[in-house]
Image (cartoon, rainbow, N blue to C red; front, side, top):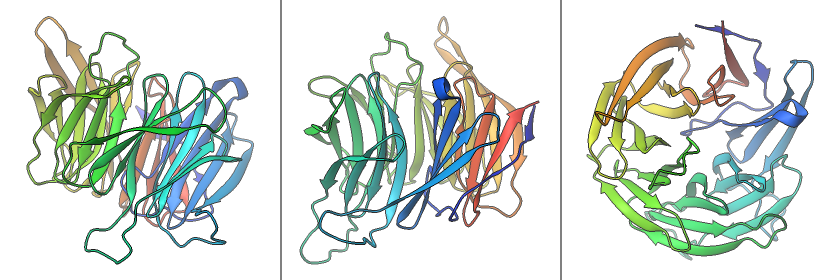
Length: 336
């Protein structure tokens, strides 16, 4: 179903972080941007669709008034809003927002770091664009910061802090199907496996809390009102977002899942884990019976590699890209 394409080289290898790959497709310019985190650097590659041109950029972890920062980066992710695209980088010190090509930093938000070191590490992780003008970012305290983003300029403001999770945020996702009927449009996950389902607006409203089972939920997606969550057990669970009903549980991987992605137009689901496997699944919704079916379509083995990022490169799932711990390349697969 898929075959391997030419890999894209990156300047540094990928760190072993959840969801350590972000992809932004820029159709008018026939380009795709990729970002991969290595320690305190974001490796950024712009690749032309014909595979002939690549340009590289590296973004350092920044702090105001500090020449070089050693603060480790936890995640880099593209946020697509109707009016603009931003690249959001989270670290142990704060949150940076850049123009999508990484050229200009438009916003910096410092995290509250205690004067004296505590047992609890401080960092931000979990990034998602929500609705028309919000970007949400999770922090290690379990809080979720909601930023109001104007259609242009740098007048980004912290509009709300959502305090429902008790453990560090691991990942979050907004409704990706584009459907306006969906009541829930954000799901957030934490290190205990708890999931919170939200409705965005002037004030975000908690619709449902799906309890965890003391196993980290490392990656989460929201598609057509269904939460798709990947866990440290190697399992994928599908819940109805608003009611929390468990639709399906799949023993998908032998080890910790690091990344999930959904191609919203085709219902393809990508899962990647420490067991060297990337699997492609197909989700089918049956609204009449309110059920979801999961079918396994394809797997790829990246031998001896702890996979830490996997993303579709387009909304149909025609191609996907994979990163692995200590690999200085982005591996690509395309449908045959």
